[in-house]
Image 1: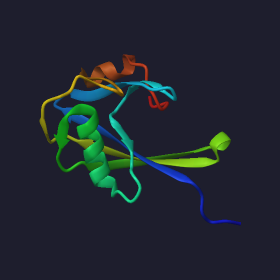
Image 2: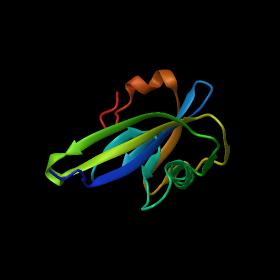
Image 3: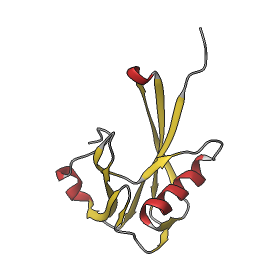
Image 4: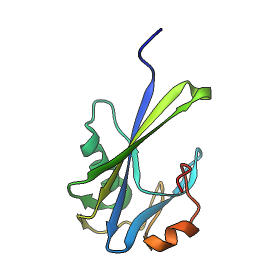
Length: 124
């Protein structure tokens, strides 16, 4: 039995400030809804620099010292592929927020409002 498989590596970061959290309303063919910003780790790219890069691309913010908060993985039978997503949190950042990108609208919401939003990725 082979001990290797095809794996897609992604990242996601909950950027927060006080009682507000940054969310993105994804508009993608594969999924849509509210999620934390993030994306794919490029070939040979280290994990932490990848989340810093993705947050900059999707929000305009430069995050500083993101902390690993968890790892989520799942297997897609029809694609014969595993996805591993590294989940980060960060409260230190600089820059100006881009309110919309090609990937969707980005906005601050209060933590207690998250229960009322439609989530992508099945998080809730």
